[in-house]
Amino acid sequence: MTELIVTLGDLVIELPPSSGFSLWGGPKAIEPVGRHFELVWKKVHRGEIEIIGLDEQQDESEDSGEDNENDETLDELREKYQKKQKQWAAGAEQDHYEVMGLGDLRWRATDNDIKQAYKKMILIVHPDKNTGGSDEAFKMLQKSYDVLSNAKKRRAYDSQEPFDDDLPTASEVEKGDFFEVFDSVFEMNSRWSSIQPAPKLGDMKTTYEQTVKFYNFWWAFKSWRDFTFDDDYELDQAGSREEKRWMERENEKKRNKKRKEEAARIQDLANMAYKKDPRIQNKLKEEEDKKNKVKEAKLEAKRKAQEAIENAERAEREKKEEEERKKKEEAEAKKAEKKRLDKEIKDSKENFRNLCYNSIDPKQVPRIEDVELIVANLGHMQLNEISQEMKQSTDMKSVFDSHFEQVKSKIAGKEQAAKDTKKAKDQEDSNDKMWTDEECHQLAKAFQKYPVGVPNRWEMVAAMVPTRTVKEVIAKSKTAQPTKAFTKPAAIQTGNAYEKLKSKVGEKVIKSELSTRPEPLPDTVVVVEAPKSTTTSTTAAAKPAAKKSAEKAEAVWTPEEQKLLEEALSTIDKSLEDRWDRIAAKVGKSKKDCVARYKYLVNLVKQQAK
Image (cartoon, rainbow, N blue to C red; front, side, top):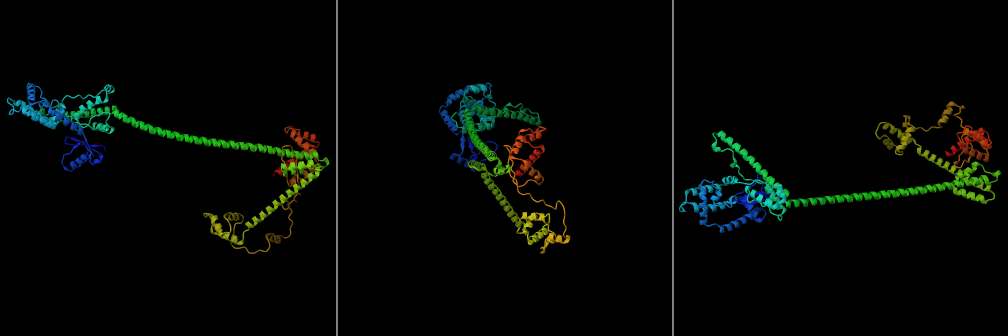
């Protein structure tokens, strides 16, 4: 809510929003009586309400006092008035301000000025107080006083006086000083203001708040200008009542149009001045600079935040790259170490094989299977130690045999330990899986109580068998579904199912391949020496189907023939049609023997891999 404007006689008071007054419809006059007047007057004395134009009124009153001191004498005024009276008598239009002696003040003259001027002029023109005074002069004075003392008539008279409605042009505003150009225009137009005195334009020292109040006054400008002087029709010339009303309507339309043009002109003047006012421009520039500073601060904060994010991302990216680089280096180091270790292992195995096959007496050369068994079960460091020991010993065969026996005993110990562990585990599992009659009875009752389709069936069934878990209950249900006979504890039976079946069937011999079981082969260890990239492993027994061919191949193949076969397999191209003929010619065996030996070795490698 903006300030409210109230008139108290000749005073104009602005009421702030906190005053508690709500004056709708523009300025209103308050009579200097009653509680409302007392409330406003107290606030005026306390300084809570501002009185517009109070200083100007005091200045005007002081000026008027000075003017009164310099008033013309009655004789001079009488002489001046007599000269003008002749002009008025000649038929010239009567100027009421000149008749009253207020030609210098005109519309600025207050009611008090008019009363004082009337008192002076009555002394000059009244026939009873002036010898030779005329009744016409007195009538003219009385007529002027009647017009000027009546507010409505005076406004109609003032409105028809010549007035320049033009506004300053753009070139005048750009070239001239703002205050020199607009101060006179606002001062001239302030004569039409219903609120007097109107606020002044001020100067560069005027505060921004006072400047805003000035423009608010002109944007809410209330004009008393009367346009009846420009009516198109005179009501006295109407021939009837209807014609008179029609004339009134037409005149009122024209007056309204003039009022709108007047209001638009005042608004254009206020807007033009507001746009060019240096005080407003400075304030707008300050606000714009303030907004720009805030905007720049936000942009700077955003930029710093973005930089922080980018720095964090860059640091994280560098950290990841460093970690990846370290991992890559570690992987490469591990790869190099593995490659070196693989080479050492390969070299140790190759050295051990060469030592076994080439350094020992040809008559005492160990079997390929025995050599490969040691190679497969010992590490490269142990192989190096054995090789070193064999080199230093005069009897390499005895050293080899001692280590071979150690490896065999080690393997046998591992196998026995594995068997014992498996047996113990099987025994433990059998003990864990053994269901008592009471548990079976509880499980059967649970199945009857919670049939298929019941939600959370297995949890509720397991709850009725407290010694078993849900998993064990499910497993038991798959192996032995309960029946009606299962719901009761089983009676003690003498003998097992086989004895019952034997008692029914009798002593019968069933001859069938399914009822016979071949005897297991004795544990054998076979070692194969392949080319440089051949993988070696051990096996407990070969397949029964390949037993016969394996024994035959083992009986006739020597280490030299085995090496020749391996060399032929690695050197002769697989795509040749007569490949096996060439292999047989190089080895010194028949084609059939070479193929059988190859199949035997392949089968042996597969068994070792398993």
